[in-house]
Image (tube, rainbow, N blue to C red):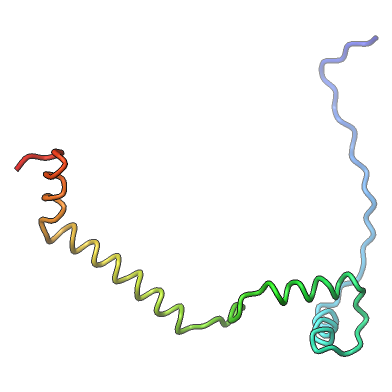
Length: 105
């Protein structure tokens, strides 16, 4: 039995078959399948399409609901500025810390 300390691993082999991808045709086929027309999609691809369309949240996508985003950002801003106001301009934090004995008044 031969003892080898430094052995370089052999290169892994894989089977790569390039294929042509046409995004316009792919989108066209997907859209046809969504609308229920005859398409060239396989059964597996149709199932994936149905699953992805059912799992998507309503209103999600590139556009989304701008009003909902604006309201969310407004709520975050009010919370942040309110927290800063309470910490810097009121003595609420000092009273809280004095209550637990962290600081003495």
